[in-house]
Image 1 (cartoon, rainbow, N blue to C red):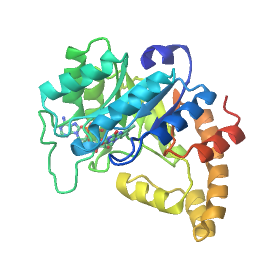
Image 2: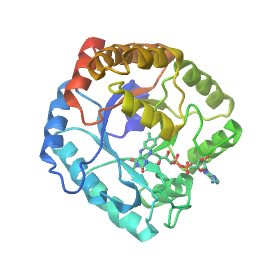
Image 3: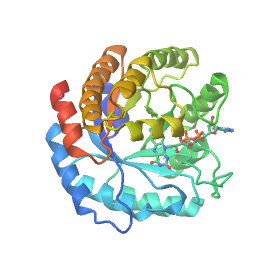
Length: 284
Ligand code: FAD
C-alpha cells in the first residue's frame, strides 16, 4: 500500500524503529516488530544510518517488517551515496515490495560540511527517486519549528515547497512537543501552498536524558508543561517515566484534536513502554 493513497481514505497510524548496531543481533527487534503488529499499524518505518554506517541493517529490518505482514517504509539519505549506489540500493528495497521511501538529506556526521555524495539536499534526491522509481510513494521531512540549520521560516518553507514540487507526496514531521507551534506551522503550510498530507512524528517521553538530547539535536522547544515535568520528576527515572507516559497520552489526544493526517510513533525500540501508552490512549 502506498501511504499517500492510504491517507486519502483515513488517518494513518504507524511506528518507527531503528536498526540495531552492526555487532548486535537483530532477533530482539524482530520480536518487537512482531508484537507491534497487534496494534495493526498502517506501516512501520525503519531509520537509515547516516554516513554509510548500518546501511545493510536497514534493509534487514525492512525485510523483517515485510515478513511480519506489515507495510514497510524505508528512510533513505543522500549521505555518501552516488546516483548509482542510490539506484542499486533502492532497487533492493523495491524488489522486496517496499513502495514507501522517506527521502532525506540525512544527518551530517560530525566534522562533515556536506553529504560527500552526488546530492547535497533532499529535494535533489526526491527528484531523482521520482525519475528512477516512478511507482514509489515519496515522503519528505518537515520541521514545525524549522530546521535547526535554518534561521528563517520563509526560507525553510521555500525549500519545503521545492520538495513538494520535486515529487514528495507526504510530509513527516520532526518531533515537536509544542502543539501550538504545530498548529501555527499548519497555517504557514497553507499560506505557502504546501498542501501535502502531514504525518506527525511523536516521541514518547520516557527518560529525561533522551528528551533533552533529542531537543538539543533538533532544536525543538520544550513547552512549560514538559519543563515542569522534567523539573518535578527529572531526578527519579521511574517517576519520570510514569508521568512521561501520561504526558505522552495527552500529547496524542491534543495532536489528534489539532488535526493531523497521521500519527507516527517513535518506538525507540522500547515495546513495553509504547504498548502501555497505546493501551492508556486506547489506540486500536
Ligand atoms: P533538506 O531538506 O535537504 O534540508 C537540509 C537543510 O538545508 C535545511 O536547513 C534546509 O533548509 C536547507 N536546504 C534544503 N534545500 C536546500 C537548497 N536547495 N539549497 C540550500 N539549502 C537548502 N536522518 C538520518 O540520517 N536517518 C534517518 O533515518 C532520518 N529520519 C528522519 C525522519 C524524519 C521524519 C525527520 C524529520 C528527520 C529524519 N532524519 C534522519 C534527520 C534528517 O536527515 C535531518 O533533519 C537533516 O538535517 C535534514 O534532512 P532533510 O531531508 O530535511 O534535508
